[in-house]
Every structure is written in C-alpha cells, then in structure tokens.
Image (cartoon, rainbow, N blue to C red; front, side):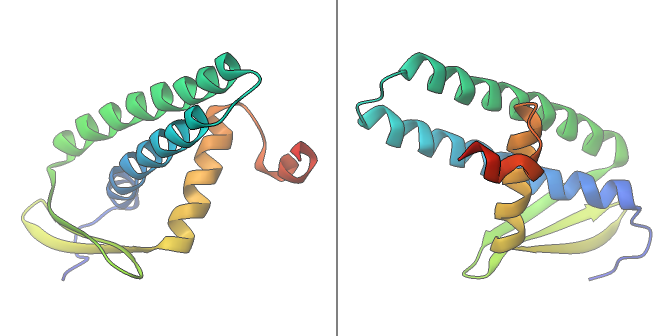
Length: 127
C-alpha cells in the first residue's frame, strides 16, 4: 500500500477514526460492568461516563467531517489478534494503517484522562 500523498494530519484523522469508536466501546462496557455492581455513588460514575461519551462522540463527528473534507474513505477495517488494521483511500491512493492493541490502550487511556481534564502523569496519585 502506498503512503504517497498522505499528510500527517490525514494520518491522524484515520488514527482517530480507529480510536474513538474503540473508546466508546470501552466506556460502554465499563458502564455495564459498573451498573451490575453495588456502587455507593452511581450518579457520579454515570456522569463521568457520560462526559467521556459526549466528548468522544463530538470528536468523532468532527473527525468524520474532516475526513470527508480531505477525501479520506475507510473501506475496510479488521480487528486482529495483534491490533486493528484499516485500509483507506486518500485522493485516489490506497493506504493501510495498523495499530497494536498496546498502543490503542495507551491512546484510549490518554484521551480519557484529557476528556476528564486530568493529567495522565498524575495517574498514580489517583489510586
């Protein structure tokens, strides 16, 4: 697959197109797990999850808009044992982008901290 003609911001759009739906899946899965438990403060937990979802959905809508403006079209995506692979077209050229699960997890965690107005560097202090 060619990387000719692909700009860094276009690559970031495709990366975000992969990450944001995965973040939404993780957050919804966590909501299901937490709602099955006997939380002492479920309203706070739900508010945090709602904030994450709202921010991710807003970013995803912007990413989709920007992809249309840049002529980016994802035509195949696969979840594999190692990570996620997508194939897409940008200005007539075919491209492929792969992300390993470890990187995806780190990016999702970083983005979640950012959405909540927290610094990931302070992660250990939150325990």
